[in-house]
Length: 172
Image 1: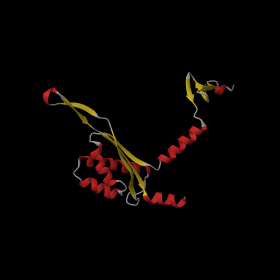
Image 2: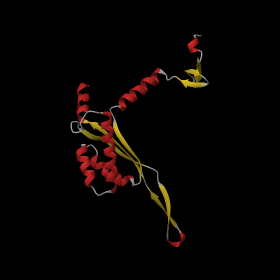
Image 3: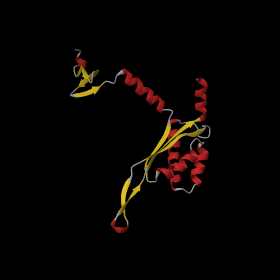
Image 4: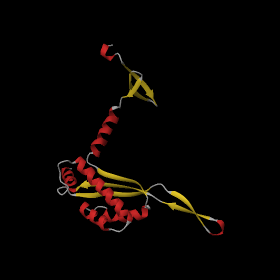
């Protein structure tokens, strides 16, 4: 064994019928990722470069109330969506406005040097999932108790640039 590789030991290990090559270095094991996994991981990483998203987790409003505002801005351009959310009086519109601004900021981080006005950003997907539910009790007549369900939700926004999506569609 060459002297500069004395601290490494390469061995094969069988886990669930699959062979994994393991590199042992100074009592630490490091799994080498297989080529198929590496290709899939690189493909996922490359796909995420063009995704501009933001998530709001455990928003303390019921999903039903938040979906009303989400339906208003789904598929719309961001200028229109910002105005709708800014001038709406619903409680969930403030949270969605902040979330949309976060998604726009994420777009700016990935596209430095480009202006938002030049990009034709629109809300490609927005969905509201039910979050955890806090269960409380409220007293009722005749010594009974009723259960109160305080609902929350998770909101996800994904933006897309119309100009880039049109270019990709023309190439295909």
